Length: 102
Image: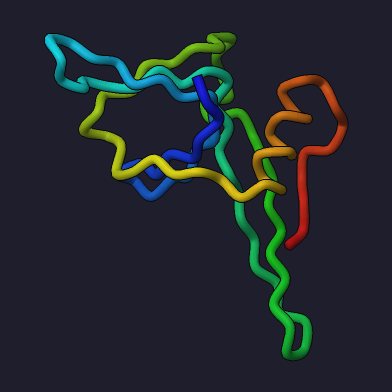
């Protein structure tokens, strides 16, 4: 599995270790391991724009680490930028850093 960023139909951005699930050679869904939702806040400081990104568990009220998502709920899967990928890996591996400014 590789760390990827999934854009879901409801426009949520979820980062996780993602594996495609295949049945009879056709993709049917995705397995998301330790999925976290990206919460993005924009701030305008004079002429500059600052973006604050925070990671929160995608589904707060579960202890499940592996979640299956039907393929029709995923719009696309992309490679996250390095800083977001590092932040995610630090968070799931127990580090304190769970937000970053860009």
